[in-house]
Length: 196
Ligand SMILES: C[S@@+](CC[C@H](N)C(=O)[O-])C[C@H]1O[C@@H](n2cnc3c(N)ncnc32)[C@H](O)[C@@H]1O
Image (cartoon, rainbow, N blue to C red; front, side, top):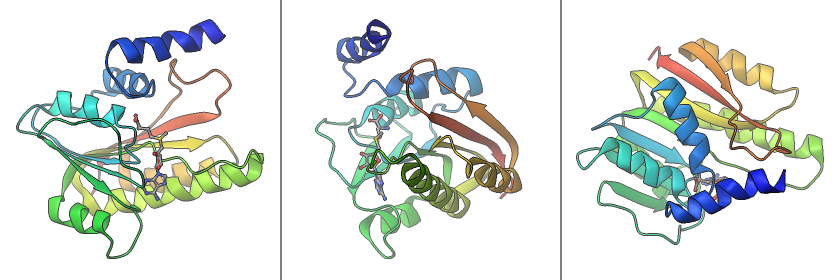
């Protein structure tokens, strides 16, 4: 199992990405055709920056990627990326201001993760809260027809999130990337064709 995990870690180093998580987005992009040239992308929980880098490559020089995180990534991004340091949910904070002025987006990505405690139910509940709040952000800032990707730790609340995504999107997909760590309980929900 270790060898399998190391593969992605080493591959990320070779490919010059700051995190192995890039391969999860690549897998989802391959399966659901999420990212495209000239798109406007909102990347929530962007540090250390690998999803942002991949999204920037996909949207090209005329696309826009607005990346938000509590922490500043230690990488330099290409010109189509604007990074904002801050809490996505802070009312009137820098992230909200930038999201409002760049909206609407073609796609909202959320790989946000809470600080985990090791207590299963607490971590699941925190993950659910982040995921549902990311959905509220998507509802506010997505274009009709747009897509939403959100990470959540598997747990009883996942059904509530699925129900909410179905209300806003024509299609809901579940995805467990091969590149997720084998012991990880994370899954991704993908909403396609935002109803607006
Ligand atoms: C798993 S990392 C994201 C990895 C990133 N997708 C990549 O490929 O490099 C999760 C991130 O979510 C961020 N995060 C969690 N809650 C947040 C919030 N309320 N506002 C902004 N960022 C948040 C954390 O700071 C952390 O950097």
